Image (cartoon, rainbow, N blue to C red):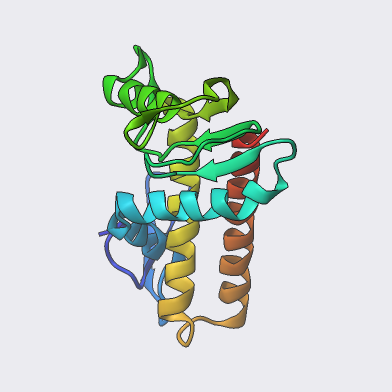
Length: 182
C-alpha cells in the first residue's frame, strides 16, 4: 500500500514500528512514480529530439541536422548529423541498421552518388548515455505531468517543491543534451 495509496503517508523510524496516516493532499512521490510508469518511450524520444533541435543552432562550424530523413541534399560545408535515439552505440559496437543508414546517407543523395562524402560527421548516443538522458527526461515529464494534473489540489509549498524538482530535472536534461552537442 505504501507505493499505491496516493493519500497515504508513512514515516520510517529507527525501530521496526512505522507510523501511517492519511492526508487530504496526495503524496507527491507516489504520484511522480506512477506518472513515470505511464510515460511511453516515444514521448521520451520526442522530447529528446525536440531539445536537440532547439539547441542545434548553437553548434558552430557545422550545418547541424537532427534526425534527418535519408534524403539529404549535397553538403559542401561540414554537416553534423545527429541520428534518432533508436540508433545507439551498443556494448557490441555499431548496430547493423545504424551502419546501413550511415552508409546510405554518406554515399547517396537520392539515386545518385554523393560528390562531397567527407563532409559528414555522425553523432549517435551510447547505450549508457541514452539511459541516463532518457531517465532524466522521463523524470522531467512525470513531474510536469503531475504539476498539470494536480495543480488545483496542491498546496503552495508542495507546488514549490514540485517546481524545484521540475527545474532540477530540466537542468540535468539540458546538461545531458548539451554534452551530446559538444
